[in-house]
Structures are given as structure tokens and as C-alpha cells.
Length: 515
Image (cartoon, rainbow, N blue to C red):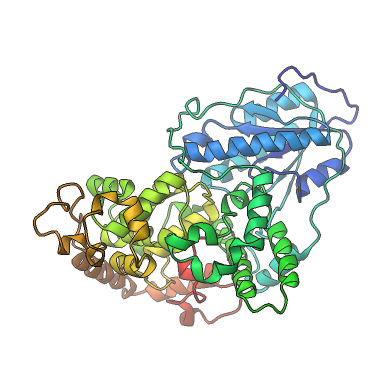
């Protein structure tokens, strides 16, 4: 990106177009708006060092974003000028640009990020008011700031995704400022944890991934997404591109609808699979709305009765074993090792990892959630934190779902292909004992030698966890509080709160939105 550019004088001043989690030019409502305003447009991305010091972020996120920024820069140049990069905290970076380039207006998408970005945006709003900068924030999804009207949320969502995409002008009156060099992960003090086989960032990759899914891989989506053996190719793999705004949900919905129209009348599984995909896109918006409605959902239990259920200081031995895939429970370890290596995991296995950590290991969801957030390349705060609470049983309104990791291994990896691939220490173990090698290895040739013994007794840990969670639910006042949570979060349609205390919409307890 150019570093020696000079500001363009414009009697109408400059409109700053602030890119955040919207790294594209297609269906970009903020860009469309900026093009209609008087004066030149200055497109800017701010690398905020304090943001990258947050415990839910990692080098693999930054590596993906770097590729997206490179692609965005190329596309902006085709419209008339490059992307300006600034490395600083948002307010001082914006103030320097205001002073140097006569910035009078700012346009951006409304970011639904983590709690840090929510607080950052409040500081930016204070800055704009103090300096007379007119800041227009436009939504890039149906998620509504301020209390959303639950009764017509689904209708408004349908209207939003069905509306015409934002128009991309053939040319923009773009200006540019001097760019700072993009920092490396090391310069941002991020650990070098890049996946060995990552997905490639950028719009071209997003379009190719979606097209391949809709034309070939997606046929088996509905029946193949639960098992890690088949999900790697059967899932759309669109989630990181949606997370960083490389492609919009509206674009994905409309492109998929066109494919559904082409396939109308087919009986080969396509229509059912694409209907399921559309449903998961809708649930994605639903969960992000939860975070917008209650930003502290990433730090506080949704139902306050669970606040002190688990120790806030995690057992370091259990936590380390879980993170490294060394728990002695083969299917859990295989899934964690796969995630650490690739940055991705299918929805059911994500839920199982959380369930195992929260129940059998009795670890607090806030601590394990930070590790998983760093591990998932497609980390989306609005999905991640509500799901962490749902799978840990702290919402007070969802079914308590405790996964049996041995049963999951037998059902989702019946031939042991996935488990053997990622837990190679178990190669001598016969198939019938693969998910419970301790039952075979009485002499300790493998278990306790090259592969650890289970860090907990699964049966007793599960019984204890179930009893503890249900004991909380039986306390006086629990149901009344749960009813208010249902009203606020659980359904976007009218429902009797007591009938929904322990039951969410069918299948929703399994969703982790890897897509």
C-alpha cells in the first residue's frame, strides 16, 4: 500500500470511510452512502494494538485479516485509490486524520463485536461529538442496536436479506493518506499459532468457497455435517468470510436462493440441504442479536444463579490437558488437536468440546471460551459467547446437554478414521477399544505410557456435574428469572415463558455456526 501519498484538497472536506469487520466493497452500505456524500472519500483501516492484546484474539485471526486487507486494497484501487492503514488506537488515529485531511464526516458499518469494541465505539462517538464530525453508522445485518422488537424480528430479518444488495459504484472520488506498515503478528505481540492448513482470506476465496459448496459439496450438507469425518468438506466453510465481513449474509442468502430455484423439483438431497443451510444463516443472525441486546453476555452468566457454579480459577492441569488434546479421552483429544492444527471444527464437535470442559472437567466457560475463541479462525463474538453459555448450561433456559464423548466417538467416527489420524499414539489399540483404550490396555503399554490416562473418571464426573447444575435449577426464584430471560432472548415469536424454560427451538442447542 502506498506510503508517500499527499492529501487531496477538497472544498467540501473529506468523508472518512472506516472499515472494521466489513472487509469488502460488495454489498457495502457504508461505501454506498459515502459515495453519495459531498467531497472526497478516505478509506481507512485502523490496526488497534490494544484490541490485539485482548484474550480472545490470536495470530491466526490476524493472518486471515491480513489476506482480507490485501484483497480489499486491490479492489479499492480499482474504484480509484488504495486503503489507508493506521496503527494506533482508534481515537488518536482518527483525530490525526481529522486534523491532517479535513475530515468532516465519517461513515462506517455498525460493528457487533466483543465487549472491547463496544466500549471503543462509545469512545469514538464521544470524539465525533466533541469535534463536530458527523458519524453515520449503518447496519450490515438485521441485528438491531437498542432493544429489538422480538415479535417481528423474523419478519424484519426476511425483509433485510431479501432487499437489494448495496450498489457498488464503478468509481469513487477516493483520496488517501500516508499508510503505516502493516505489523506482523510478533509486533502485535501475538503468539505464532497459525494453522498448518488454514483457509485463505479475501473476497475471491469467499466467492469460490460458496460456489463450490452450492455446486458440489453441499448436496450432503444436511446428513454429513455432524461427523468430523465428513463435515470438513460437507460444510460450506463460509464462516470466516462472514465473520470478517468479506461476504454478507444477505449475499449468501440470495445466491443460495438462486441455486434453490435452479434445483426446484430435484429429489437428490440438494433442496433439503440448502434449506438447512438457509436456516443456519438465520440462526446466525439470531444469536448475534443476543450479544447486541446484552453486551456483557461474554463475561457474566445469562442466569445469575449460575455465576458461582464453577471455580473462576481453573484447575491448571485439567485446563492444559484439554487445550493440548491430552485428556486421555480419544475423541475429545482428536477434535482438539484437529482444531489447533486447522483453525476449524464442525458444529457438533465444537459443542462436545465445550460440554466436556464445562461438565466432566468442571471448568468455567469464560476461561475455556477464550481458548476456543483464539483457536477458531471464524471467531464471531455474537455467536461464540451465547453458545459457550448454552453448551455450559448457564443460560437457565436451554436443555442441559451433557455429551458422552465415548458415545460421540462411536457414533460420529464409527471406523475410527478421524481418531486414529489425530491420536496416532493409539495405533496399537484394536478398533473395538479405540474410544475406551483403558479397557483394553491393562498392561499400560499405551495408556499411561505414550498416551495419558483419562484425567477424570467420566461416569462419576458426569453424574456430579448433572446433579450440581440441576440443584441450581431447583432453587427458589430460578424459574421466574428464567422466564424473564426467555422473554428477552430465547424466542423471536410470542411464547409462554414457562413452557420454554428448558426447551429452545428444536436443534438449536447443537448449533455452533461453523456453517
